[in-house]
Length: 255
Image (tube, rainbow, N blue to C red; front, top):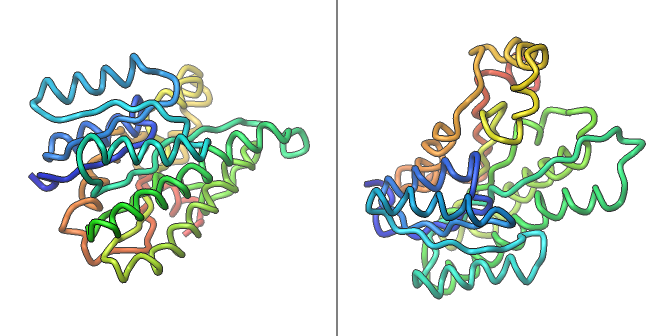
């Protein structure tokens, strides 16, 4: 098992990519803190799925856009499992709107969850790692949109661009402690956030036409990449974004 005896905190682990990562981590031996903001029933389903396969899971409610709750999430994880080895900043949201119509509230909500939350979760986790002299892992679930513009989704793109520079900067500060920091940049993944697109054949076919592999990714595929970045096998990797997008970035010329 690649993550045996490790403790991982995963934000937004109640569904989609976060759920996929939580289950893959547990399968590889990690004790998993399943964070959720609103859907307790979904988080409990993830816990049950993990425990049914003899894994360890602990459910914690926290809205990571709120500083005290973000810090409290890490504190509860350490109190329950005694340490933290892996921090996965996965929680995210989008509000689609034309730039001219974006409100302050919409902007604050997206930036709060997608950038402020990862910043302070990473900070709190890194402090615990440094205190316990743990050569830990910080993994941010970014997006192809940390590089690829997306009209009608400006706050989200701003947040993901910020996540890129957060990762690239703190990896330098944390390297002396043996802590690595990397991003995973998914393209189109089969999750609830894209249910509206999947339900519209025209939009769905248009999306598939943009992807060279002509399919969307699955949450467990993101989970397997996250396992690698969380494991000892990736100990010499830090400061990079790993795009997992079926070739989308290449086809658009963004890379």
